[in-house]
Length: 195
Image (cartoon, rainbow, N blue to C red):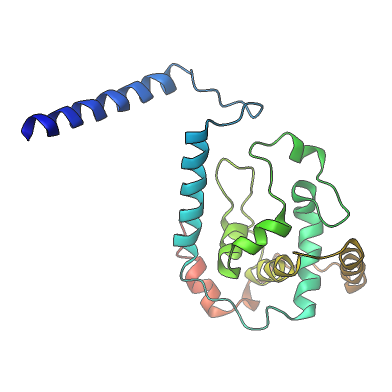
């Protein structure tokens, strides 16, 4: 039995040292033009998904997320900061998105896979090595409004999106970045525990 355990430990050490040698020698291609291997893709995807779920587990969704006024504030943030990479109904991804790897997801689909708390955590904290920035300098209220918009995004038509953008422009395009006091206490309590 000791021989088996010793063999497993030696094999693990050889794999670890081999991986370190490949990385240190610069053999792993980090170019955004080269896709990950299937193993690397699985590893990163699993780590990302599990990390988001674990870190967002305690975040409470504030009441009134379906308030149309919040959706209008959310579309304002989305159109200004997100559509360039993720596109929108009737709005193609910008040039920046085409050079990113991994490609920014279509949020009409991605929004279905995450809870409101998980979407909030992603917006607030960003995702390493994906091009997704952290919007932690924006107020929790603005980020929750963006979540409200994202939850409405699946199935949204070009006309609906254009109507929301027009309503946002009529709303006056308020800057909510300094509006930290308007977030609910439960949002502050859980979001400060992240990372």
